[in-house]
Length: 120
Image 1: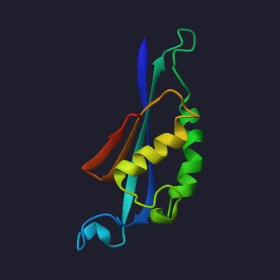
Image 2: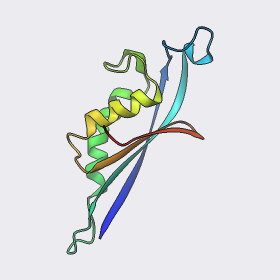
Image 3: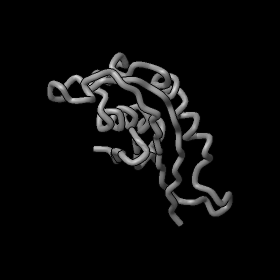
């Protein structure tokens, strides 16, 4: 049996999008209550009955949370243009080497707008 497990995380941050057309509302400094979903997938161990301990995903996420939470994303190295698309890839690039079972990073910028990234 193969499963997909999803952990949800949240952080608060400010950003501005420097590459949008002049006058676009996202050109101005603003903030979001970001929600991140990290999905991992793999086979269930028949003996333990689980694929991975959720704490493995949580431990992998924690350093990124510490970097992003209550910060100005434009000042985070690699996020000078912090669109949802770039943020999803930035998270993937830092987590996938530690969490090879990662299959999707989802960034919710608002309650009803999200970006899903599944690697290159």
